[in-house]
Length: 229
Image (cartoon, rainbow, N blue to C red; front, side):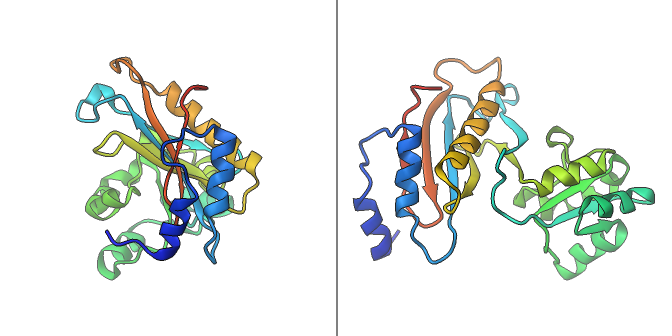
């Protein structure tokens, strides 16, 4: 892949062989996040598990203490009083069949999180091929299929993120923006790592955290030390 001159210049500022301490890594990644927009800072965790096995899956959701810096547009699938509950809690859209049709017929995707009441999953399931690949399908394991719609909406608006393994056993998650101060990014990062650590499957053997890296939207990755975990 051909890289831009700016990307290559940033790469020169990063020691590829070094394992940075958390605070040092955050300072370094912020120093190379110099785009004209507020770059997202992502954490990448490679785990010593095999995602092909059901008993080694690592998946969940968490509200970061300082959010992600992203304005979340929330869609709720519900009926009756739950529609009003969702809107009162801050949902951007709430309803049932009208939104199913809008997504299917108009390819409408102007939302960042989807929540549903359990009784709606029969019809929401028809959107699996659309929402699933985008990581938007409601799931009880992540608290997005629930009768407590108000709480779920508030969490989504507060910056709740989902984490899950990809096919290479890596978790990729945003932990904030380059404009965040170092302490906020550190607290978000440590919160996410702690949550993933608690989610370690009983079937996982050997070293759990194989490697950790930080990257911004437009920068190379920075490797972090796993010694303090």
